[in-house]
Length: 60
Image 1: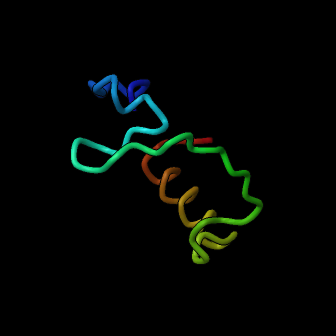
Image 2: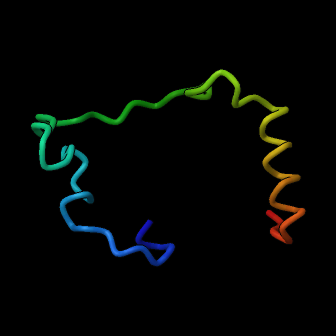
């Protein structure tokens, strides 16, 4: 978000921070996953996203 020009509060850069109301995590571990988090994020969805960006002049 910061890279995109948003003004991000420094506390959000801490991986354990969960906002002003929730208690922080103790020591959140990184978890590697091999499948999309959302089942609908399949190859078809990926191509839909790529085509949508291309229509907007964004080529990746």
